[in-house]
Length: 464
Image (tube, rainbow, N blue to C red; front, side, top):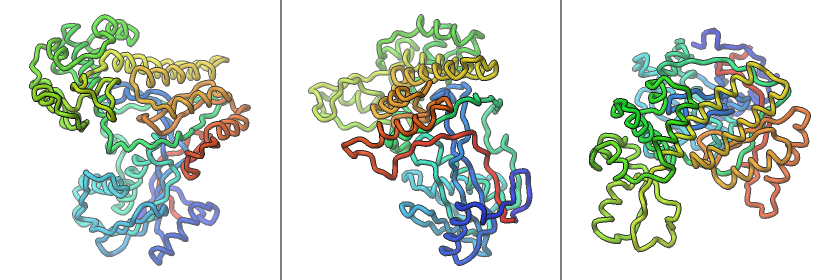
């Protein structure tokens, strides 16, 4: 079943404490020995935040922290799934009748997604059962892709049990999918710091709202430049159709969009459509259901209008604890979102260029780009939070050449570029300044501060 392939490595389990502990826990749980292990790394986005779904490149790095699964195929058709973390309950289900409850963000759903994806891809209807024990050291809800690592692991587990291979180009069906190696500076290390603020992606509408605002910004820019705006979905499409540089797109944004927020009526006037067309033809079902806010029925007309567009973001002056007597202003910050996307896409290209040219002040230049990225995420895209901003400031104070939020934002982690010779003092000082505060508000188990280097990719481990 676990056939040799380029993604397979034989290891002496006894020489790897974590693998040995997982093997022992598996034996204690299932009364048998794993036939193979699968690992998939977490990843950190060094630069390029919230621009991939707008059509632009990002610069991620696989980290050493990973998800590791011990696996034993069995003759039954039952999937037994367990986790070394007692906070995550066991699951027992049919391997050939996978049901995923999309309304509940349960940990095992990520495993089931990977398994079911491979099943459906190959049309497998009689998958053998298996016992699986999952272990992970990627901080959850931190922006380091712990859920993606679990999905990848589950897919690789299923492929291995089936004795199949699947190219990465097929597994990740972006169109087109391109990857370019970037050599990172040798005189610096990247340090991950967890803000200890978790953002439950399945329970928030922030992300959906930003996607919607980017889409609307793309349509208004396209309309301004006399393009076929109704066919445009992403900001990159506008640049591609105009055939101009990112710097020129920033100038177009300055001319076409105003910094003041847009309301639904103004959007409709700009595009020449009705409010109903905006709601039904442009907004996706996810964004239509994005925000649910309960407000007093100030007046029938305004309240009806608010409910119709309850997915739109609210003005900063809206006070949920002491709501005003009139309905809130429904706004779209299109200028700010477009400015972030085009400037961040330009920073990614500049980062890559600096890495290729490797000037003497390389670390300083890369750090400046990371600092600019955080400012844009904080001020233009508004995806930071006070704790992330504080952590970024602390990291810069104690020696980071650059520091920024990474991942979706609204919590999670920062990534900092730190000269290698300053690493020990940096770690000590940041730990004291952020994690050892007198109010004791940070739970010890969530404290996470570590240096990392580029990690390996997903692979299957066989005991030698």
